[in-house]
Structures are given as C-alpha cells and as structure tokens.
Amino acid sequence: MQTKLPELKCWRRGVQGILSAWALTLVPALNVPVFWPILLLYFVVLFAYTCRRQIGHMVRWRYVPFAGGKKTYRAMAGGFAKDDGKIQGGPTFADKNLTSGGGKWRAD
Image (cartoon, rainbow, N blue to C red):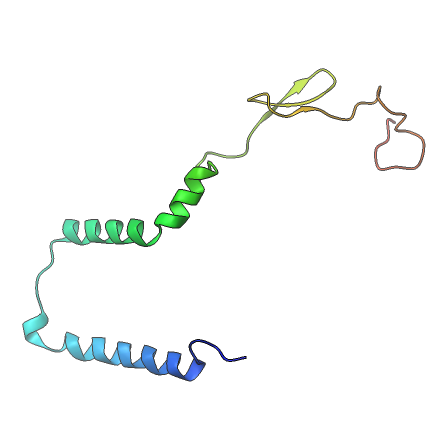
C-alpha cells in the first residue's frame, strides 16, 4: 500500500511552511495594518465556504449544535410519546407478564 502523501514529505512541507512564514514576518514591507472586522469577516466567509458540505448535511438532518439541552418526553397512557407525537407505543405491564421469565423488566 502506498499513501498519497508520505509522512516524510508531509513533515518537510510543514516545516518549510513554518520557516517561510517566520522569515516573511521579518520583512518590513509585508507589515501591513489589518482592520480587525475585515479579518473577522474573512474568517467567517472562509469557514462557511470550506465547511459548506458539512453545514448542508447538518441542516438537512436538522442537527442544531447549539440546542439547549436534552429533548423532554411526556407521559402517555400505554407507552411513550415524544413532544411532536412521532414516537408512540412501548412496553407496558399490561401487555406482557414481565415478572416471569427472569428478564430485565420486573414489576416488583
């Protein structure tokens, strides 16, 4: 098996990038002032552009990473029900004799 990027080349390119960036910080002609709101806007646009597939996937499956806590469930006669009513039914003591058979569920 041959990798697309061997480890030695990866390390070499990383070190070259760090050294060239460090050397360019010493050049006074490249010391330009940057207005921080423009830099922040650039970061947000760059982040959205590079993560557009992942963001689209999260929107498609209604994943909200900043939701406030765990979903709550309300009691319903005869089983379980989610707040939006999609999940219904469930085991009850009236449906099965849960005390016999040595199962996990026991009525006592």
